[in-house]
Image (cartoon, helix red, strand yellow):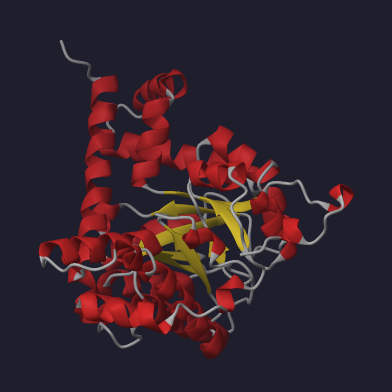
Length: 371
């Protein structure tokens, strides 16, 4: 592989900026930071070129748990201000405050891009995942917390129905709990329907900055689980390409169909899930530590990498290893009715629900400490 640093032997021509910043300024690919922790986000914006960020129950719980000096007194204050509120409500109020503060850091990028970037992704409560109307109502409320909030709704059957209605009502969407090409396509189609409905009803046109997440590493995780469960032996390196292949395929489909939403890559497991996507009109959203490691190692990238095909023999090996690969890779690999029981969906929803429970417990320990 070559990198922009290879273009000249003249030291004065060497670009010594962080490689993520080089990519952000030399390609249309946008870097978002997969964390709303304030210090990490500031560094990602000002040093690495990040123009977006995300928050979810796992991230929020971690941020609050790791900054007790800030959040313990604040959670006590929220409880005092709302004496009848339960621990879940208090915890989510803290999540809102964390998200709004992160959104404020992204306002310059939001304004500079006309609303396409500079977005803070705020996730709907996973406990609402079975209730379309509740997801829509929470999405509308979250959307009003700051002008650059983009709301995460799961790419399940119920969630996609909520995505369409929320997008129609003017919410900027980030589909989450999404791991496969069929999910990306189903969400993209739902957003198109919503935008067409808005136009037909004479509602204002604007840049919503809609994105559809593909959690590439969690697709890899699920395939590794299945291969181990089924005692399939193959070169383990093959499995590192599954998420990469799915993202490249999803990106091609989104471009071919002219969807007014972008693919967003999340859940990093290997650095190819950054380097192989450069050059496309999409978003890469590594955790902060991944961005640090990419830059510290000067990990190579190519400005047109998104257009490179995954080798045919790799795709063939993945298909042969497990039918779960085809379910996630082929556009028609799953119907919308099958999304909810896909292994990565179940695992991720349970993790998010577990993070909600941990946040409840943290708030309980703060406002009602053990005797």
